[in-house]
Structure formats: structure tokens, C-alpha cells
Image (cartoon, rainbow, N blue to C red; front, side, top):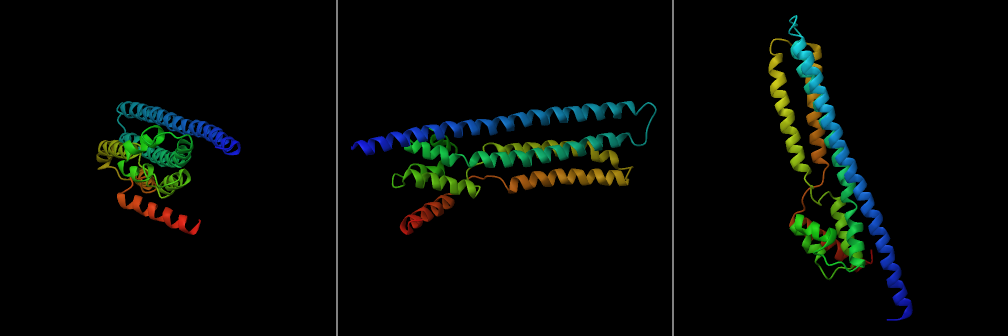
Length: 236
């Protein structure tokens, strides 16, 4: 190995190490943002229901015709909060997914085996990714490009978000089952607005699911590999 080649390898390793560190810091930041917002949402939901349940109980003395609206209003505010939270969480998760390409590139430059680091995590989470991450015919940049293409196409896995979406929808449905039957004898313009707010909450959750990362199929991986090889042939 010539002195120039050795110096280039050292510079590439140093650059990869610095990029790996900064990427990890950014990933930690986004993960912390998600965790903090989960806490904020839980506190807000508990506060909303505590307040309106108190109002509901107090309305029994003297009896009030609109007491059931307190429960419906709590459900409406909760639905909109949960919808905004899931949509926001999915957006942040997409930002995290776009970091995987940098992780993979740095690990390849630093000669980290694919069974370890982020590559190992991706293979264990999404076994189809082994077709890219363990393909020795790909250069480090091609491997990272393949992961980036999957992230951009929203095919890099859900990281627990689909389960959270289902749980959120079930919680919201439970709230609706408690609040909506109370309105059978009272239908007003305000009630209709509340129903609209609940629908908005469900729609936001649905939009978050539609725009979110999903697990890649084997066909997705093969398409990426084919495109990488075509680009190699054209010099792209």
C-alpha cells in the first residue's frame, strides 16, 4: 500500500467516524423528541379526562341536560390530540429512517461486519434486507444508496409504529363507545361538531399510517438491486 493510499484510507476512516457520531447524535435527538411527546400526550389526555369527568360528576347536582356533553367533549379533544400525535410521530420516524443510509455507509467504510451495528439491527428486524446488506458485490456507497432508496420509498420498517397506531385507534374507539351512546337523547349543533372532531382524529391517524414506513417485500429489494446495477452500468 502506497503512502498516498494509506493516508486516503485514514482520512476516509476519520470522516466516517465523525459522520457516524453526528448521525447517532441526530438519531438520539429524534428518538428523544418522540419519547418526550409521548409523555406530553399522556399527561394531556389524563388532564382532559380528569377535568371533564369532574365536570360531569358535578353536573348531577343539580341535574343538567348537557352533562353528557362533557364526556363527548373529552373524547373529541382526545381524538384530535391523538391524531396529531400519531401524524407527528410518523413524520419524525421518517426522518430517523433517512439516517440509516449514513449509518450503513459509515459502517462499511469502517469495515463493521453486517451482523453488527445498524446493519445487524436492520437484518434482524427486516430479514429481507440481508439481500442488500450482505451482498458482497455492492460497494459501500451502493449499499447505502440502496438503503436510502428504501427509506425514500417508505419501505424500511415501522419500528413499532403500526402497533402504536392500532393501540391508539383501539383507545379512541373505547372512548367513543363510552361517550357517543350518551348522546342518544341529545343531538345539537355542538354535538355534531364534536363528532366531526372525532372523525378528524381518526382521519389524522389514517393519514399517518398511509404516509408511514412499511416493511419491504422481497420484490421491493429485488427492484432496488436491479436499479443499483443499472445505474452502475450507466455510471449514474
